[in-house]
Length: 208
Image 1 (spheres, rainbow, N blue to C red):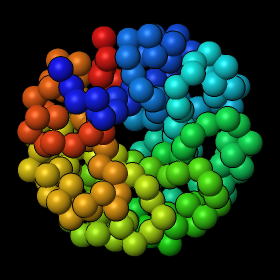
Image 2 (image 1 turned 180 degrees about the vertical axis):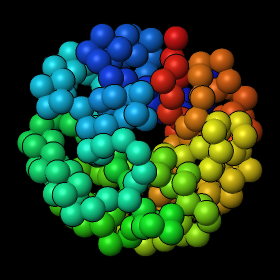
Image 3 (image 1 turned 180 degrees about the horizontal axis):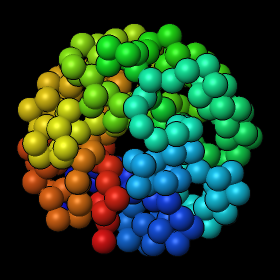
Image 4 (image 1 turned 45 degrees about the horizontal axis):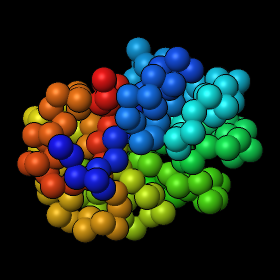
């Protein structure tokens, strides 16, 4: 049995998946479009429909295209426009990440998005797993208004990245929440939680 303070976040892309995740015990949702592209900003109408269908908190992906996380001015303007729309809806957070061409965190843009989001907490997503030095990136993000980092420790799965996840938890000391992700399921969550001793986990199949 998981400790009572553990939060399970289900990654979803439809109203049906959102309702099912809540019924199966998810504590909150990350709502995305195009999971085949690792998640894009969902259609605003979908956000409204999911918000009306569930009672648990919803975080929404802010990402205008697939591919890398290095954004030009057009990309940035599109995401800022989407953010303005999302702020008007009853959602509980934004999920965003941006890098420079050398795969370091784009701190300036990240902080700008945090400021534009206002009261909505911002999670820095798995873009951090593309960084050459995830620990350095984590230390940088501590200096911003980012509230949470979604990560598999630079590996394909949380299991493979567990040592980096432990280091991230050690250096953040709660200043930023580490949301462990990467093939986290209802079957391996118990062993992962026991190994990490952390409280926040994310996955497409985290509840069943």
